Length: 136
Image (cartoon, rainbow, N blue to C red; front, side, top):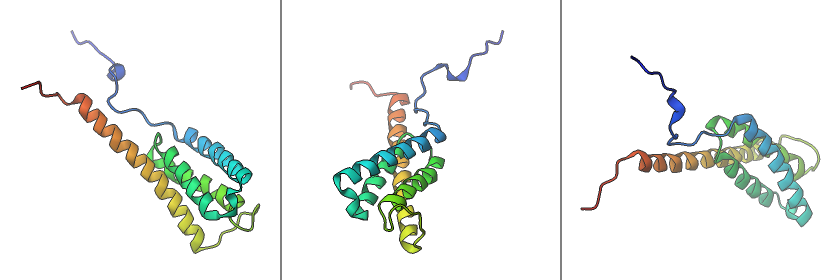
């Protein structure tokens, strides 16, 4: 007799990434909060500080995300950076090469966060499913 069992009954060796729309909503809320905090403490006086902070947020948001969420994370972070930290404030404007560099930095940060998480998860899964050697 054949017994059917679901494949997902066991503990997964690698955690499931967070859904992409949820990560994009978190990027929107996190960017809004970060820009508000930077504005309150005077961090928006330099666009480099805002860019560095948003890159750190993008990398942090990339940790639980899938790779396909990275462009959306970078775009949302760039929108807040462009609207509130880069002159003229309050207006979205494309400045050519500087904006291309900013978007690429944000995309790289998000992809780097996701890559680091995948490597750490893969190494952890390898340790969990690889039979260990006993004391010799």
